[in-house]
Image 1 (cartoon, rainbow, N blue to C red):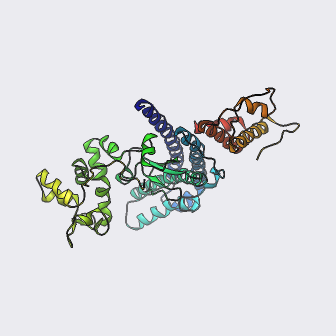
Image 2 (image 1 turned 45 degrees about the vertical axis):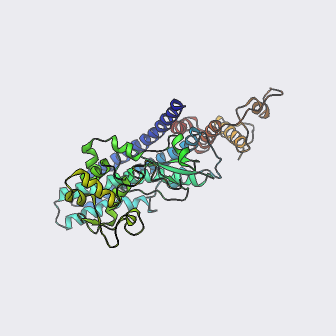
Image 3 (image 1 turned 120 degrees about the vertical axis):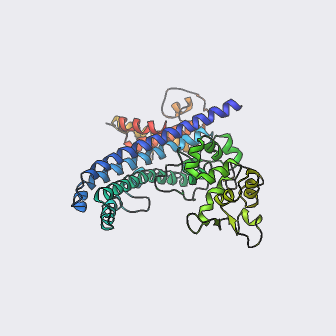
Length: 417
């Protein structure tokens, strides 16, 4: 049983690693177009020369966005099937609907013009021209990669909302920052937004699971502490900060440590208000007592045992220890016609099989062959499995999106498999 679960987890994670790489390749291709166009911008005529190359950049980003969205849509049914579950969607997401727009709804044209404004602002603030252009170029790369990732996440969100009883688990795409790491493996309802920062490349994993035990059984839990321990001590210090990383190594809860920053009035503040009113710290602190940050605790307690005691008193080390799942909450059919082309036939057959699935029938059974006009008589109906349903759904998406064109269908199906 243990080996079977491990194989499930490996298969599931490989599937989403491949999906993440497809999105990364799309981001890299679009960012390369953006960098080439930005290098042609004249510092003397920033707006004018950037507008000349902007159309090509917008086109490249929109293409990458569609790739990311298609990948999310095509892989969703097979992701559910890999967990041994599947539910029919109430509608088919359109990957093209999220291409050409930024995550906040703005048109790409307006979003991608902003580096020109940024460059001129920096020059106006006294920056050297070369430094200002480099900073604006970095901003452009960030905007492109974030816009592509957002398109994939938006398409995944639509697909999840269109499939009853489906939510999602957040999966890391290492290397990840501390803010993303504490959300690893967290289960969200279909209508809960996906928190992300610029350059965030975490992804949705659609799932029908409703309990922590099921999530573990299907390998959906990205253990934040396992991810932390996979880093070297130097990398832990870099990602979390030296004191925060040390606190986690000493047994502090990762969420308590990372969220400290939200309650600091300014960087370097020795105290935090985070968790002092309704959080766990409010149950351990005395009335009116201020909560020290991990940096302050280590500065005031050179002995390790004293520091650990203070971490516990200040609400960083929880009674249950470091629990990996602590962040989990609650824990149309075509008609045969004369002169039908091969492309039309593919769409018709894919739609016919999809109708079978929606009716709860296996379109690949010998009974289905008979039902579809085959020569078999008295054939048997075999059960419809989640795996078959997911394969038929993916093929239907591909056939409709590609209008039956074989090369394009194969490209889309490769995203699913």
